[in-house]
Every structure is written in structure tokens, then in C-alpha cells.
Amino acid sequence: MSTNKAGDDMHSNHVGEFLKDNGIKPSYQRIKIYEYLMGSMTHPTVDTIYNALCDQIPTLSKTTVYNTLKVFIDKGIAMAITIDDNEVRYDTRTDVHGHFKCEKCNEIYDFKANIELEDEDVLRGFEITKQQLFFYGVCKHCSEAK
Image 1 (cartoon, rainbow, N blue to C red):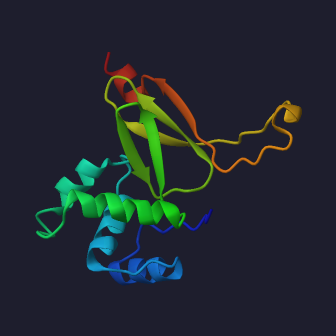
Image 2: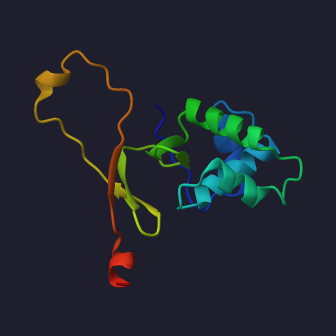
């Protein structure tokens, strides 16, 4: 899995180069979807991405968003987060990190995570291809609002 991360100040031409460097043809729609995903700290859903871009790209379809996100995931420049049973969210941060979902406001926050296995015998001979760590609770903003 690639650990390339795009910087927050990346412009369209840089996104195009970044996509090319990762073996992805940089179409206008792909560039705009990656820019949106990169600029969103909310871990958006397909619907969120589609609704944010459909006025700007009238030919955009939800199928295009799904297919584009699949390409990004397959190339290792984005990841799917299934933090709830009923929705998948997307993230351009592909390094090992955790997610906290507030049960009041539904915001998802990234946090650094260093997952070390204490009992390595349990997974001896296993090939770990992906790690995901989720916490659920109430964020500090919602706690302070009580």
C-alpha cells in the first residue's frame, strides 16, 4: 500500500501530477474528486462528495464517484472507512491512524495510533494487509456544550 500523502495546499495541476505518479489517468472529474476528498476533514461519503461537486461538474454521476474512489483505494492513495454498518466514508490519509466517531454530532476525528501486538504468537504466520482502529464516544466539543 502506498503511503503517499498529498499536501493540503496541492492545486489541480499538482493533483494531476500526483494521480499520474500513482498510475491514475488524471481526468477533470478524478482531479476534482481527489481535491475535495483531500480538503475535507469530515471523511465524506459518496453522497457528500457527489452533492458538493454536482453543480460544478454537471456530468458527474454517483457511479463515477464510486468508481473513482475505488481506483483511489486500489492505488493506495485513499482508504475506505466503515465506521458504521450503514455508511462508508473516505480518507486520503493512508498511514496507520485511528478514528474517533462522536455519537452526538457524528463527526469523525483522526488520531495517531501505534498498534503494537503484545502477543505476537497469536498472529504468527498471518499476513496483515490493513489495520483499522475505531473509538466511539462523545467529542470534547459536545461534552463542553452540555
